[in-house]
Length: 386
Image 1 (tube, one colour):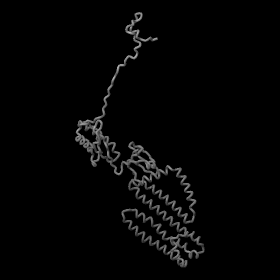
Image 2: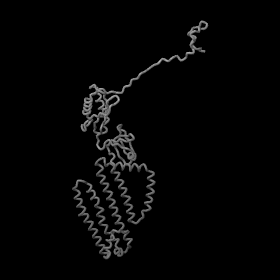
Image 3: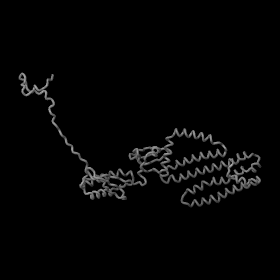
Image 4: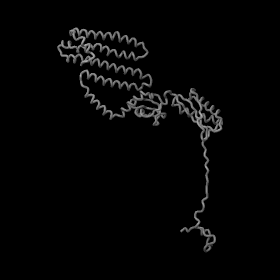
């Protein structure tokens, strides 16, 4: 396997005897590896150990092995590409490349792949405990490991001159089949990644969905997100549904939540005294924050009342319902003590009754006709029961 970038180096050693080229290349490789290890890398480690962050220390520490191996094995691989060296040994150039060149290059590829995977995994270990914002980081670490594995296999097959076209075709067909069979799982997975990068919510946030579900986020997984409702019921929602629907994060950008308490007061009320009384009630409530201060807003002239709204803030969305309950109770008591009327709609219902007129007048005898055979006149008005 020839690499075009090494062609100028091969040309340098083209006219040099094989034994001299071997000595030069091996010496340069070993010397370069020692310089990189004891001068460059150790100096960088001493410098990064004094910095506040650990990421640069992780980066330099994980790159030591691939850098030193690359410097040491590059000379061996280069020897197999020099025609004068290949012609001086008893084996053919292809055999020399098979026994020394390709194994050296394979070791270099594996060292860099291992280092790349270790760097990302250690970065994830550093950030995953720094807050719930990074709870999804282990998922990205697993994806990166899979990408590195696939890429390493492809590079090794290329080094050993195996065609990867059939593998790519088979992988494409298998990917399509798996995609159709597990499309919901794949949609949930990528939906979770989208939610993570969009920073839609994190652990501990109180969210509300357009479908009516609401609760505190207690778990963010690859496939789904789990909410704990106010009824202490766990609701598991697919990430794809969350990514497609509307999510209202009641805890962002701040955890405090504004509470609106509607109040109606009778026409003719001293509104200045009324507003002051309600604001004092809100100021005395422990669940209500002092800043921003509670305030009253006159919204509209209603059909039977002056419609007001008390606006105040609580520390978290989960306290809003309890705060509204306590404020309503105390406002009702204070208004009653101050003789301030809370009107309510009233309706007057009028009931009318009418006496029905006699419907059947044909049975009554004429006034000038006497009863027959001395019968009772009242009996003549009754119909024959037979």
